[in-house]
Image 1 (cartoon, helix red, strand yellow):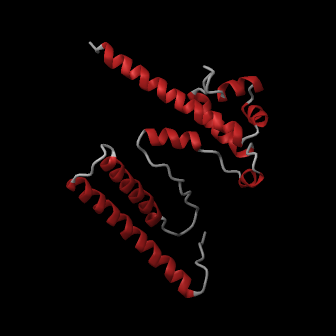
Image 2: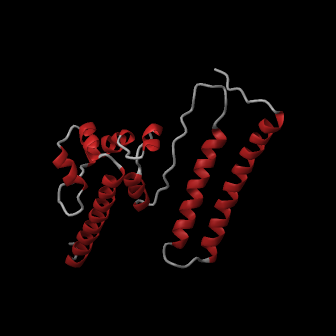
Image 3: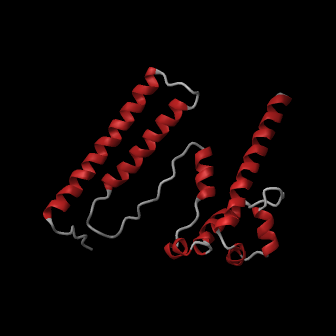
Length: 182
């Protein structure tokens, strides 16, 4: 049997999380043309405004999340951002942060004879270093074991970074573009 105090505590956390996410959603209306966003999502404008209102209980459902984020590519108020056609990932970043994950842009591997393994390792090592540091700082103090783990992860990150830098310096020094062949 779960104690009532624990249930109330979990309900409070859920409420705080929902309120926090609702405030993040509310910020979208300052950066995006909400009428255009409603059109892209094929929902009525008043419904869109309710979903973005932190004081309204109308939620953005999980099934709508990806479509919502994708639609933000085309609804930026800032024309330069709209031209770039990059989605507004603020909400997704917050969710990832709360789950203790690091958000990175996936590297799409083109159909070339080039090994992107080093770049993939850089992303992996960055994530591991960030996770180690985050875990070490969570309780407000860093133990010698946590410091050792952080140092190890940061050394791994520096090592991979230096390998990529050496590769890029060879390309730079050659004076010629590195041609990716199909």
